[in-house]
Image (cartoon, rainbow, N blue to C red; front, side):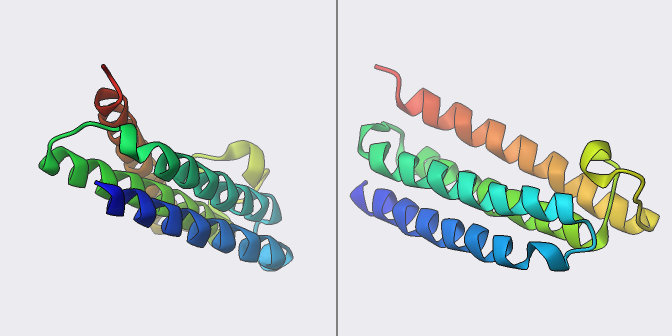
Length: 137
């Protein structure tokens, strides 16, 4: 479906812009290193959506699987940026000991960010498998 390809392109540029704006705010985060990570996540996930939108016409899935792939890839990419930015704001360290370097946050914030990162991982694995399945012969 061509409209999904165009929507992925739009979301790719939107997420790329969020990444650029995050870069401008980097120095104001509780954890500046994680702010840099959030900046890069926005840029890289935006580029990923642009690439996926560009090749979407080649993805062959049923209507239901196509909608599922679209929804999971958007939730995963935006969720990745959001969770990383949240980790930068709160200074959590549970899943990012290198970028957190001696920082930490209350247990509920650590759990929120951990749940976000685990969810993003599952969503991105699922969407990648669906797109790969759709790109088979």
